[in-house]
Amino acid sequence: MSIWEYANPKKFMQTSAGLLPFVWGVTVVCLVVGLIWGFFFTPDDFRQGSTVKIIYLHVPSAMMAINAWVMMLVTSLIWLIRRHHVSALAAKAAAPVGLTFTMIALVTGAFWGQPMWGTWWAWDPRLTSFLILTLFYLGYIALWEAIENPDTAADLTAVLCLVGSVFALLSRYAVLFWNQGLHQGASLSLDKEENVADVFWFPLLVCIAGFVLLFVALVLMRTRTEIRARRLQALLARERLA
Amino acid sequence: MMPDLGKYAFAVLASYGASLALLAAVVGLTVWQGKRVKARLRDVEARQGRDDG
Image (cartoon, each protein chain N blue to C red):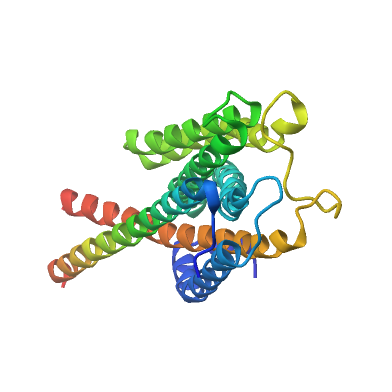
């Protein structure tokens, strides 16, 4: 069996229909457990006080905002190279979800930044590259809507996705390139000395799992809708020709 | 049961409120669009099935 079998819309619909109830179930469990654990059962940080509770939303959403764009990059490349329609539709389906995660990261970052940095916003390298990534998400969604021919739309949005990947990577690694920003380095590290304390780390891991699964569930659902919409367009076109 | 958030209560509660609202919006939009397209497709398939048959 090859992975390319899932590029067949029928196979994708069958497989995703079986997967979705399980993915949704684990998503809800992870999000409910992770957020309740983080909000109600973790202590305040000695420096940041109760604002540390924002980490359970800010870090997973920021991670997924970038990872969603990486997923769109991979599926766009598959479209450009192999011309599998399902991969182009999966990229289209992921964009509003990625935009939502980006907005959550920006909003929670502002609410966290105001009491800690004394400002809602700073033209810091990571924040600025994240804002540009948001604009790329908006541009990507607008471009899909603006072009009538779906294959042309898939081609042009795939190229836009390639360009936007620079900012997705910048928003991840900006703190390593520039030292003058307000934003601290990565909260998560394989080095135990640098990683957040275990008491925050374990609920954060559960929240990250919840956000990843929520992304998978939403993208599967939205891709199914896009496949149905494509079939609907084809049937309506056939009706007009008849 | 509610933890004491101290002077940062607004920042924490606003973060949770805004995030949950955005998540609910994207889930709601996804479900609504899915149902709408599915229903339209079913109607068109049924109509064309009748016309063909």
